[in-house]
Amino acid sequence: MNPKKIATWNSGKAFVIGTLLATLPGVAIAAPPSMKQVIQSSQSHPNATVYIDADLLRSTAGDSAIAAELSPQVKEVRIASALDFSTFQAKWEIGYATLKTTPPNETIASLYNGYIDEVAGKKIVWTPKQTYLIPLPDDVMAIVRPTDRKLVGQWLRKDRPVNPTGVLLDFAEQPTVDRALIISIDVADVLSPSALENRLFTFESVSEKDRTSISKEIAKLVGIQLVFDGDAKFTAKFRFEDSPVKLFSAAKPILKEILVRSGIFFKEFDQWEISVEGKDLIASGKIAMSALDDLVSLFSVHRMVSNASDKTVDVKETSNSNVAETSKAYLTKVTNIVARVRDHSASNTGERAQWNGNMARKIDDLPTLNVDPELVAFSTEVSKSLRNNMVTMQMANIKTGAASVVNNAAGGAQVYGYENSYGYGYGYYYDPNAYAKYATVGQSAGNASFKQTIAAIEQSLAEMRKKMTDKYKIQF
Picture 1 (cartoon, rainbow, N blue to C red):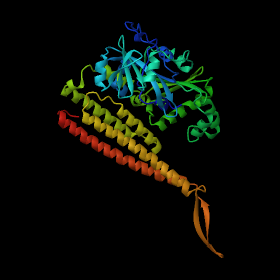
Picture 2 (picture 1 turned 90 degrees about the vertical axis):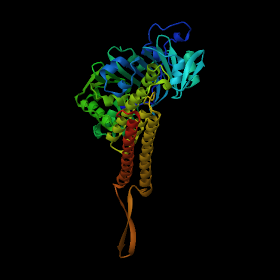
Picture 3 (picture 1 turned 30 degrees about the vertical axis):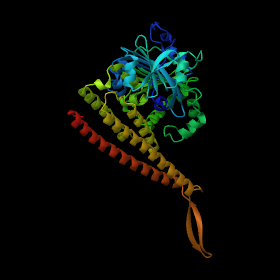
Picture 4 (picture 1 turned 180 degrees about the vertical axis):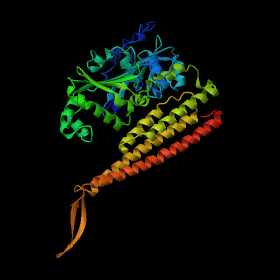
């Protein structure tokens, strides 16, 4: 039931055209396809979708990073994806965006340092970001990820299964009016009662006597839908095989602990309302913009489309002042991400390591068009430092865990010497805190490494800010 992890898959850069009439010369699309059509036209069965009403999101969540990154040229985005729940990364993503204006293929290829390819008789633009961009009639931009020619060929030829089923189609039937953001996930048969019970063993919000029964109820979860509407209200809908009324009293404490453990807890959650409607358990209320960003932080379709639709000139022709302003905004975003790394409250170095990796990907996904090349290279080093620190903390935990096993093979036994009437001998006593002691060593080593890394990054940020200020003569 972790909404952050469920929503955390890598680089959502994709989209589909329902009937693909646009691939036929001279035939235009009468209207953008619905989410149901996106699902039905996917080359395989997706298990996740995302919908964005860009104008509404910008007006409702103007302080969020995702809204700030949306180009004014983007109107709507719909994506279908196959999410690997073991890695929380997408195997493939297909979708579309409706734009106000669409530049020609040549311009898009130039902006991304890509090239124009042709598959199934259709011109497509290959980009180094493992994404195909396919401009279609009526200012619709198709996006297919990864850049697998067989994948895009199957999609263009309509070589796909028919009559998909599942909770995604049920969610897709709901209207999108006054919905700024909708994320839907099919988790049927994903959750194991036994695995959940083991996970809940460390949860303070679940008592030992209720652990088994709650695990069995949670395992009945088949779908999750996250909605951010025009009134800035966030709703998390959890759909089960049958009524989740048995989870009603435990739901809010469990959700709160999940959020805290995930590092996206926000004070507004205490005022959230929990209800049960049919097979749905619903949690709703106001949400902090930083938490909203976390839930969709690894979706980057809006960035790809924004870059392609908002810029119609070659980078070489960009004015110096424009580069300065774009670079300033870019450095601000990098600085904000670093601040979130520094201020993140993690219960252990394992969680902090995962968070650092997520934030490194956020830096990598920032739009770099018209940004000073030296600044782009600098941000790459920042994300690299975060990843290196992630690995260092993980290795420290592995090393101390291994040492604990080797030195406490008898379950924490320690050797001691004694002397009696027969002479001097040896014995053993059991130390129940042995593992905790080794774990503390690993946590200390990981935290020390983190402090050193963040201090070095912040020092380099200060130096880069001064360098860019001197170069462009504006205050960065």
